[in-house]
Length: 542
Image 1 (cartoon, rainbow, N blue to C red):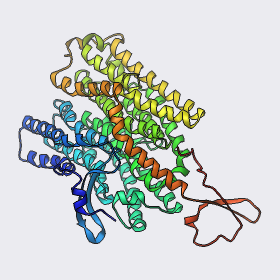
Image 2 (image 1 turned 90 degrees about the horizontal axis):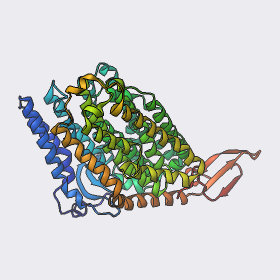
Image 3 (image 1 turned 120 degrees about the horizontal axis):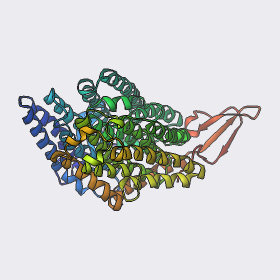
């Protein structure tokens, strides 16, 4: 049953912070409507983005404990069992912060980059922030789906209107891929409502469903979330979208949108489909390793800086999905920490690519050689984010990646060794582009007239740089915030798997006919049966 409204609202003494964070950008977009001056549109949006960050300050009161906090519950359509339910736990709180902090950086990096339809562009930015915060805060499946779909339109418009030469192809491909996944997600939501009797996510997380039901729901979730991540081979929309999107669009794609897929695996697949998650874990691990190796290998061969970083996202997100489906505390904590790290690092790199494009009007490595001679401060930041990207010790990228690698080695020596080439490839492609941009010969003669970092570029680079160093040297506080939720999720996950007796059905000749679970059998099986203790078909749950 859904907890009483009073119980939920008494859990926080603050104003309804999640609702305010979700819909304040919509209010800001409405305020922009009558404004005609482009500079005033930029200023108002920047002020609104800073206010959004300030409004999120109560979230600093998040406590390192299990359960959802800052909860809100308002009846929506009681006859259908719909409620406006919001809340965050240790898995989602970092993603909400990431969504809120990304907005002012997107406004700043678009200050001179966007020169037409300025108002419409900033409206899209604000609406995407609403959708992102809503996805990570929603505790009702229908509400989650509304926000999930709401992101599609402004992101499509951002690529289709303000994109590059092949923007039409990239935007349509992005739209079709995402729509296909969303359709299957809707099917899964309807099935969960019919079988579970509710749309309330925390209640569905503790329910038990039959193995057959979990099998098909997991597959629907898998396609929807794998496209969003994106996992190999569902990744082909991402490089095109990144290359054609304006800088702010690439930042939101990398920093927030990709995390919706991995968040979906953590929030829905593991708690609601634990038996199927164990069954499909070998497949998920294999695809994750393939994403790591493939993404790194393809990135190494790129001459377009933006496409290189886009393919690197496929590899980095492979580490995240690998950590999730190892089902170990180290792996899952490393995955969540890496979600945060990837958003900070790759978002900053895309902002810097936009900055160098404004100077050289090219994203080719060969057209941006020797920048260390003309733009030393620029290359200082690029070097820092590059080191963090391949997990250099002392940076935030190292912490998340090493936790996942340790979990992989604890699972098996072979799996750990299979991941190592991905880490080496990351160092290879990042050092390749960084060394050429810093000291490559011959340096572009036009670079003599290029200005080093401007004030607005200092403003949107200094905070991510500080986070890279702080989270790399002192990750304990952030890991402490997510630990209770991770351990609680894995404890319930393990309990559900251990509570099921596996029944192996055999034919009269003694050959196995299939693997079933007792709850799936309506009547005793006619053929001879042999009952054994539950044994996971995939890596052991730790």
